[in-house]
Length: 202
Ligand code: GLN
Image (cartoon, rainbow, N blue to C red):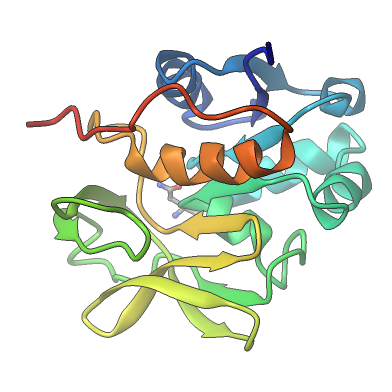
């Protein structure tokens, strides 16, 4: 019998509590990550949306930059949402071969919702909430674009690193978290995600 996976949620700044709720609902154990010691023994990690400058300053203050790079570089599955996508890019943690353009949707359309086809997510489109969101301006060959808005990449995957420009924790549609838990499950012998990650919004 294999226990629930332990998923860390970076809890420096931003929407970490909501991610924790979703992950618990999906049967994961959740640990808020604030220190280097909190990274020990994780099966997966979420970097939430919020404000990437604040998160950057926080991880620098806590000495988390190199430990996060190492953990993710060593294969810890990770999901970055909005500011979390920015944190994964070339100019921040530098673990994904993507370049985020911050606040890319401009001043007029700072926030909006959209129904998005996300590659790898079965069923109806994913309800996505964009809040002063970035898009992915450039990416390398190892990166697969999973979704676009107006021709701009807003979701991508590179191995077990998944980045979405939207907030996937706010709608009750758990299927993007499901992608992370599937990646986690492939690394734990005998573990299969308990939920079918159904879309709870409808
Ligand atoms: N605009 C924010 C930033 O640049 C990201 C917004 C979000 O995470 N909702 O960090």
